[in-house]
Image 1 (cartoon, rainbow, N blue to C red):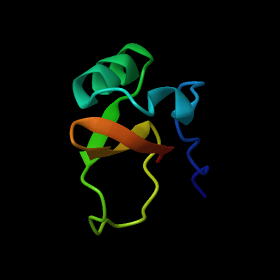
Image 2 (image 1 turned 180 degrees about the horizontal axis):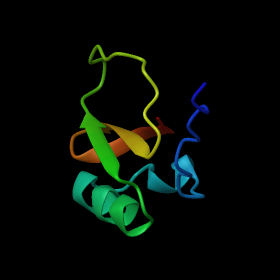
Image 3 (image 1 turned 45 degrees about the vertical axis):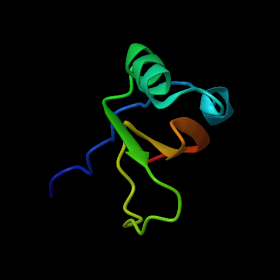
Length: 71
C-alpha cells in the first residue's frame, strides 16, 4: 500500500496582518512570505470550500483586504 502523502508546510503567518492592506500590497507580501497560491475575492462571492495547502485567500472590498484566511 502506498504511503499517505504529507502536504507541504505552509508559511508561518498571521492572517490578521493582511487586513487593511491594499490588494496589490497584500499579494506581494503573501508571495514574499512563501504563499504559492494567492486568491482575491469580492465580498459575498460563492466559493467551494476545498482546502488547498499553500493558498491564502483575501476578501477584497474597494481595493482593501477586509478578511483573510488560509486554504
